[in-house]
Image (cartoon, rainbow, N blue to C red):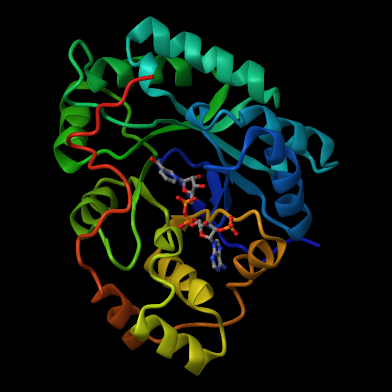
Length: 280
Ligand SMILES: NC(=O)c1ccc[n+]([C@@H]2O[C@H](COP(=O)([O-])OP(=O)(O)OC[C@H]3O[C@@H](n4cnc5c(N)ncnc54)[C@H](OP(=O)(O)O)[C@@H]3O)[C@@H](O)[C@H]2O)c1
């Protein structure tokens, strides 16, 4: 049975399921089973990264799923130690090898690292363009890029990122970057969509959940969907993996969406992209 997850179309014509499964913080030895469960439930979009050390488990689950490769959308990301041009090309080769699923659907620059000496994300993006021309990736994008970073890519490079994956949830609605993305044909992906659980006891979200007879997690994920962003909640708990997939048989009112958006406190759960500088 195919799921009711809508596809969005990226700026190069590639389709991406709006709901996927994230594997950040899933231990490598549990990632194959977690991904296999998600695929059985109906997820067809998996978000991993070289940094998570679990691309191998994702690849194994995809290969052994019995599902046609073309029906599964796999994202991975360039790690922070590989921003130099040649290192980025080599790192993509390594991701291809470790994933071992023939090609990558979407490859992202994980962090801009604007303050790391000797690094320049413009050089990194030029390597991404070369990777794209190599034909083993269907779309390229960025993650954690602020508007000034995107402006530099627009001025100095040729390919507009297909995606910008940024932290977005009710306590960090990130409207400025989302608006920039929308204006420039860049799809926004919302990471930590339930703030790693941090928004689930919010009284506004709980009240809406009670009214629509859904869980706070479902209401929050549905809010993202109705705002048009792409999400991939992470869970290693089967009931939650199922719950997070059941988003397409109810709707929030415009008033609900506005009330949840109004919860913004500009509160990050993760690092600030302007200063984050961790290189392995
Ligand atoms: N690009 C980046 O820099 C970046 C950064 C962070 C994340 N990401 C991506 O975004 C994905 C999602 O973000 P995230 O993993 O940080 O956080 P998240 O999806 O917002 O939250 C995951 C946490 O919430 C719990 N949870 C999941 N579903 C739940 C539910 N229905 N009810 C109650 N609790 C629930 C999970 O617990 P259990 O697992 O114990 O069930 C886990 O502790 C990641 O996996 C990764 O793919 C990207």
